[in-house]
Image (cartoon, one colour):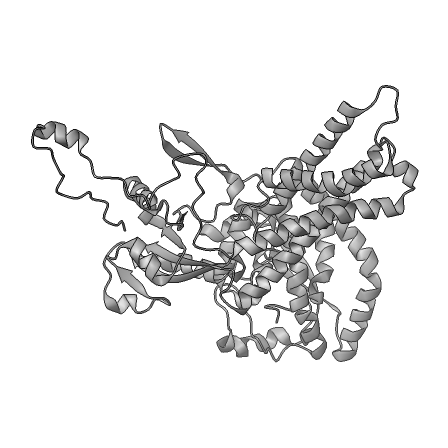
Length: 521
């Protein structure tokens, strides 16, 4: 895995200096092109991947315009006397609203890491930092207003300041969501705005990381090659989707591949000395080093680093399936289900009528499913198949396109014309709001599986620790396009890393998946 770090074998010595003194003082010079900056005025190492520079510049300009737009929005809606209270004149107010506030926002966004290239474009950490910057702006403005308030004078309008700050945060988050959407489109259409990555490790470990990374092009990580940490026969190496190397100098290989990131996978990062030497050799090269540990499917909030005598220990917390956040989740489920059923009642009536006109029979279909802690319940759905669908299932077993405990056919002849539309639009699952209201299901959770076989042993049984959901990580990650093992892995990841913010994120992503009709059949 490592490259050669040996010093020259011959060391120049002075003729009148003893050998042990020469060995002590006549050391090879440290390469000037490698290593960290030695003084406070040295320029930081330039990254080999530079797509983030124009993106960050666009974010900075966008944030400045958003703050100015927030000030203009509030000013245009309020009386000028109310807005400028606490200022000596309109000029001072204009300077504060359109110069001081944007610069303050920019400074605190930067201070809270909202322009860190490692968090932009993916995940929720970018927006968390924007929220922290918002709190910092509010605290700073309050402190300054209190410090410069004249005795007995009229203070700065607190309501106006609050509205400006909240409006600015809303505009900034909306603009960053739009910028992220543009970034995703660019990444889908080509390999621009991406990180070219070399994977290091054993063949199974690197192929697993390749599969995970390739499934999510939004991350912008493009594996271009694999460097094996152990020798593998050529017949196995030929099965890899990218070129496979062994025994090469990593820095030279990265430069040859025009890569900018080295990813150490699994057991390849288990030897601390080897990994440390690799990190040393990458200093000053502009190449990023990332580690994909063997501890997989554990989200960041559950992992804490506890260094002991220079040894970083990863402490993994237990999943939190109780507490105030869990109570809030259950309350949100019930309230949202009740409101949804009331608002959707006319639509339910129209769909029921359409189903009855297509094929005589009940409008709703109820099937036995396994729920929380193995309790059985009947799930509500709009009937999308003909009434004799169960009798015809045995004749179609050979055409099953999925594995595991699922039965799916892309062009199932048992599905009615109306049912095909309901499935593609996911409207057939809306009656599950009844199950949510009864506490049998949740808005977000693992998929509710049929109770026909009852074979919920091993890892699969762990998904029963939470209520099944109308939507979940499986739905926003591919739905019916996923195989059984991948669906189970996503469900278990959700159980182990649940949070209320994660639920809201999945609900938001579900809207886009449903509109695109991705994996629905």
